Structure formats: structure tokens, C-alpha cells
Image (tube, rainbow, N blue to C red; front, side):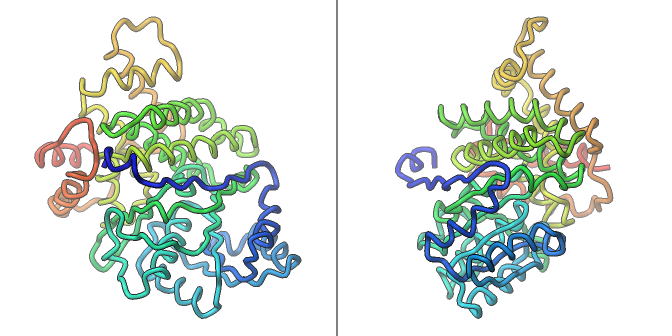
Length: 387
């Protein structure tokens, strides 16, 4: 995949950013002659003043719209098929995804299904199964974590089979991404924390994996610095627009990094918790991250030390091991400071064998992990992570 990536056409979204930038969206739609759109969102946002404002602005610009607001965390096959039906019935030509990573992922796969009306979602699972151009997608994230507005990935869950899997293709990368820090001001503190740690997981897994490049390393480093400098401030002071904008940038950079360099065992394990127990993805990543980094041991010490020095040059530590362990301690400290627990609770231990099998299958051979873990290693991790 690393070799093939040199020939992949990586789409970079046109980025619209700044306070009140959401108000620019109707004008962009007008310029693109897209006068009928589907807004994909969730119940919380559909009942907020934020959606009302967007709809009023679209009406003023004579842009017709339909709203699909049933997206759930870890968007389901049913969500996608319902939204697709509405998109087709209303003869929409483009989509606005207003929400977190789940909403943006849902819209991405709606576009893929529109491009492939006779291909089931499960048949799109994996790499490069979607090649036809999809309807124009305007991604408006209301969290700073998934980076989905910058990535080629969409994650889908199927409650009927307890599966959670990714669909990866460059054409799924949104055409436009809009970063308005005001959209994050009312994000609940716990969502701020878990989505921010999700972005940190993306940046670190991309950095320590074996498919990174100079570009992805640079993006990861920038993201890690921004997260360490702004996540807790966003958690404590929700109205700090400078911190919010910095977290949007961090999430976007981490998204660009991992969409090219991929992720690792943290994600493979987290997806099983999402598939079997609907554990929110960022929450799972935040808890799992330090356990996996500790398990990698000396394989990642030099890389974590490099990140530690980028965040905060640590002169009192004489070895890379000490710097790496400081980095892991800081991740744990941040989790604790923001109310994220050390373990994932209420898990039936009898399901762990199935979770282990699925995590192994996902991680190998797809993810360029720094160290291959055995089935026994994963059992050990699952028992460490759960209560």
C-alpha cells in the first residue's frame, strides 16, 4: 500500500475556515450550481438553532434541501440506505454533512451507494472498491476529532452481525471542508475530550506505523503539538475560539496523516468495541491508546521520544525510553483530567474471543503496525482494557 500510494490521486478538500464561515456555504453552492441538497445530520443537531440558521441561509439563496437526521454514532447500514432513498427521492445533487465523524461517514457511503446502485455496502468494505465519482460532499464537522472531512475512510456498523468495518477510497474524501470554530462552542465537555483524544490517536498511530512519509510525519507532529496545547483548554473553556480553531486544525492534519499512513491496533481493537457494544469510537481510542503503546514497548520508544521532544523538550531525561514513558504518562494524565476512565466497563468476557479474531483480521495485513501482535497478545490487551 505504501508503494501504491505514490500513484494514488489524493484529493485534498477545498478548506473554508474562520469564525462564521458556515454563512459562506450557500454562496459556494450557488457558484457550483447545486440548488438541491441533502443535509445529513443527527437528532441533536436537527433540534438545535445551528441547523435552523443553515436552513434559513439556504432558503435565502433559493437552494432547496431535504434533511436526514437519524444518523447514530457508528452509522449503520440502515442509516445509509434511508438517507440514500431520501437523496434519490428528492433528486438531490449534493450533500452537506453537518455533524461529527459518524455523520460525515454516513454521507460518504450514501455517495458511494449512489455511484454503485447495485452494489451492497458490505461489498465495498476494504480498499479501493469505490472508484466512480460520488456526489459533491460538503463536510461541516461539529467536533474536532475524527478528521473525517480530510480522509478517504468511512466506518460503517452492522448491528445484525456486530460488525464495524471501514470503506477506503480516495473518491470518498469530501470535496469541501468547512471549519467554523463557533460550531464547537456548545460541544459537551466529554465529547470535546473523547473526540480530541481520537485525533491524538490518529496522529500517533500514523506516526509510529511503517507506512509514514515525511509529509505524514510532519502532519502528525503538528497535530500532536496542537492537541497537547489546546485540548484541555477547549475542555475547560468551551468558548475559547482560538483553542477550538487549533483543535479543528489538529484533527484535520491528523486525518490527512492517517488517511495516507493508516492506523494500527488501537483502531482495530476500538472497532470491535464499537461493533459489539456501540462504544463511541473516540472514547474507546482514548482508553485503549496508552495500553497499546505500553505493549509495543521498546519498538516505539525512539518514535515516542521524538514526539515528546516536539511537544516539550525534556532535558532531565537522558534516554529515549524515559521520554517515551513520559509521553504515555501524559496521555494517561490528560484522560484523567478530562474524566475519561482507565477501563471500558460492562463487557461480557465471553465475547472477547470473537473480538480478538476480528481485531486480528482487521489489523493484519492491512495496518502497517510497528509490531505484529499475536492472538495471545491481544487476549492480554483485552483483559487489561476491560473491567
